[in-house]
Structures are given as C-alpha cells and as structure tokens.
Image 1 (cartoon, rainbow, N blue to C red):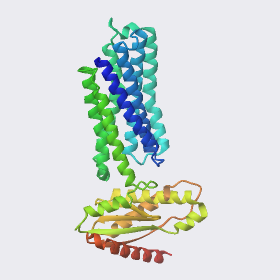
Image 2: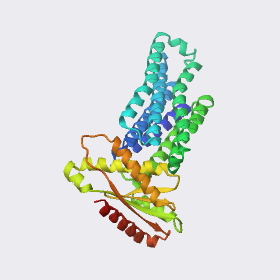
Image 3: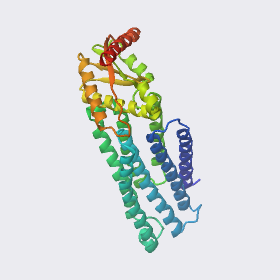
Image 4: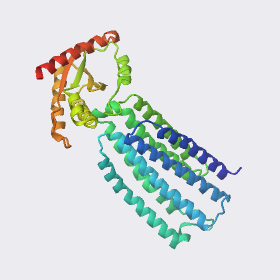
Length: 378
C-alpha cells in the first residue's frame, strides 16, 4: 500500500469517527446555539478530511492525475480549510463570549465570510485562466498556493488564541478558565500539526489526527458542562452544586444567599410561560453581572423553579445582596419586550460552616430570611 493510499484511509477513518460524533451531537436534547455552531465545525472537518483523501488518491494515481483533477482537489482543500477555521473562530467567540446575541453572531459571520468569498473567486478565476502558473512540470502546487492555503486559517486561528487567552485572564472569567484554555489550545496544536505536515511529510496525517482528538475532547468537555448546567439560564445546576459542596468541606466565611423571584406564578399565569422564562433569564443575567463585579469567590446556581442560590466567601453578605439589587435594576431598565410587568426578587442569607450535613439546615435558615424579606416588601 502506498503512503498516499494509507493517508486517504486515515483521513476517511477520521471522517467516519467525526460522523459518529455528529450523530451524537444531533441526538442531544438541547437547542443551544453553541452546539449548533459546534455541529457545523465538525461537519466542515469531515468535509476537509474527505477532500484531503481525494487529494491523496489523485496524487497516487488511483484517481487519474491531470491538471483538472489536481487543481480541483487543491481548490477544494483551500476553500474548505478557510471555511473550517472560520467556523472555529465563530465557535470560539460563542464559547468565550456567552453574552453574544444571535444578531451579533450573524453580523460577525457576515464580516468574516468576505475574505473567504474573495479567495474563492480569485483562486477559481486564476486556476481557470492560468493553471500552469500554479503547477510545476510534475503537477505539484507552487509555494504561493501553500501560502494561500494557510493564510486565512492562520489569521483566524491566531485571533482565536489571542482573544481566548485575553478573556480567560480577566478576573470575572477565571471560573471558566478551563473552557478558555481548551479553546486556545486548538490553535498551537493546529499550527504545529499543519506546519509539520506541509513542510516535513505531506503523506503523514498529523493534522487529521490532531483535529479529531481535539474535537472529541471539546465535545466531552461540552457534554460535561451540559450535564452540570441549567439549560434555560446557563447557570450551574444542582449536580454542579453537589460537586462544589464536596470541595468546600471545612470552608470558612461562606454564606448561602437565596434569591426568589417575587410573584413569578402571576407572571406565568398572566403572560405565559415563555414570558416567565424571559423573566428568569433577566434575573440570571443580573446575578451573573453582580458576581462579576464582586472581588470575591461566588458560586452561582439555579436552585429550582424561580429560586437561585449564591455561595459567597465573604464576611459581608449584605453587600452581595445590594449588588444584586443594583444589577437587577439595571437589567430591568434595559429590558426589551412588549410587556412592562414588575420584576423583583426577595433575598435572605445564612452562614454555612462547611459541614455537608448542616447544609440543608443552612438553606432552610436562608429561606426563612428570604421569606421575611418577601413579606416586608409586600
């Protein structure tokens, strides 16, 4: 078996593995935009691996090697590679900027597609008008082709690393540092793998292996986050709360703060459950903003229904509550929608000593104070 045929087998094999991954993604019971973008990223990797396999078969002569087939597979590789790393950029932006709206993502996509369209037209026209310019006497691509092949992917992927690392270093993002590092790690690996394949051994599927492994790793990490994240608000859920409590055994200065949306049933009954979901998302945004502004460690989760919980390492839990109220006012002032009903939240807190067995009692105590706050505001 020739090295080119072996390369084609490996590329098709990796494409099959990613096809199984794509099937698994499609079966996930989540409408999250992040998974939609990841699905597209996996799909473009499959397309590239298939195109690369065809390139290998043309070079081996299994598919007749002539000027048309050589230019066709090289054109396919260049365009799919650009789209692949464009998709990587969009997915990374969504993963490291969860506050992005669909409109912002659509605007970013439109801008980033422009250089890809330019490359498509320039290569297509030049391949048709002057094919001999791009190929030597052995029908091998010239150095300029490899520069164009790697230029856009390099720009996209370097931008992913720089932006991901910069965001990961911000204090408010350190709790999600693992996500930022995973996104950023894709870049140096791709550069090394692609560079090694282009300059040292074109018939060794280094790039193919690396991409398949990192996509599987990203999927497993995303699946783990899906299991531990509330699908509506993207906050931690009870599963993640249990893990967090196990890590806080014997912790000092921890306060449990309970937050309950006032008259939530009335919002659901009057305006419907979709509007009720919007109210919950507004409160969750306010809680995230408050946690980001506080220079202390805070664990935030949706405890259930219209109740949220914060575990704050502080001696001044009232300052956290005051910050939440300020952020809630800001979110209410900036909200959009046809309805202008009142949104408010009652809060209460209690100190927790880090003993797992006493946590339920602590929650009950914080709940009691929360209901006292609700009655005083009524």
